[in-house]
Image (cartoon, rainbow, N blue to C red; front, side):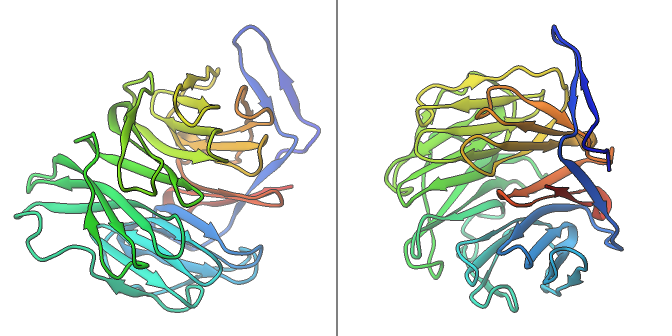
Length: 319
């Protein structure tokens, strides 16, 4: 971990590296690539990734214990509505817990032969409230090519699901909700679609980019952020009516963005890149991640932060 006194600054478009807060690599024996992480408290959290790998900690990440989920599908996201009620998506499967992750049960979300020989793949899930939730992704043909976007919606807590049409046919990567009404989905080729009625209807927003957008994070109905390939960072202050591209000196592929509060946010991506903003995403500086491995997942709060990546990598923020 780089000492907090390290400070390197150059101007006029050159690199800025700040290590006022350090990230420390946690030693684990996990072999799978990890893409998802979620903490329900400072002590209890979950990581997940390739081939159905799922592990939990109850001691703040000091130790991790694998949980057998009973699937070989890649787990793409974990999300908890509260400490007890959580959801994870793995390929075409959805798993739900009501006991804080002690046990998980698979829930049927698709009807048999609903897609006529094509394969649905779920990448992200969110619940707007106790009853209303959305799971998104894409539909693949037998050759593995994306042929359509996929948005599934429930109004009864996940027992029944119906497909919702949106103004996009491309691959959808990530979903975020603020409250019970406002939501946003980002996807391939700069796609951003938004809802103001809890997911009943969706409208396209102009992102100003054709880069794939892998992650979106909204603090409220107005302030939001999206990141993706080709060093793409977008921010909005009006709910996505307009999106501004933020320039940085750090080329790369950004996988996740997460704001711990209204001003302070983090981005992680390929090559171990970690960026930090303390001015609502207007400018970004680079933090030392202590790794060059790809980082795919991110979870932050005001008091702690975690990121996960290739080959079982777990790093935590020392605040």
